Image (cartoon, rainbow, N blue to C red):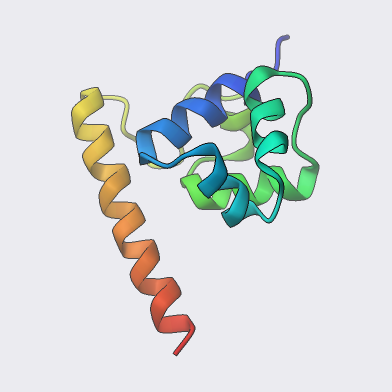
Length: 102
């Protein structure tokens, strides 16, 4: 079984429209760590996998390639529709984060 964390992290990051540097800041790691994850040089720690799964709204099994379906069932949507949903989730997450910091 081949773990797919590298391609899944990159795909999810790009779908969100964020850079490696932005994801690194959000995950409290270096940009080179995110790059290494995406190139398959290293894999995130268990704690970072959980953080990534929460951030991207997918299961850790999905990130690792053990499960092919996303936590939110988007299988019947087109890629542009998925990108819109990810953008909406990102928007709502930013609102939650902003309200939590008040």
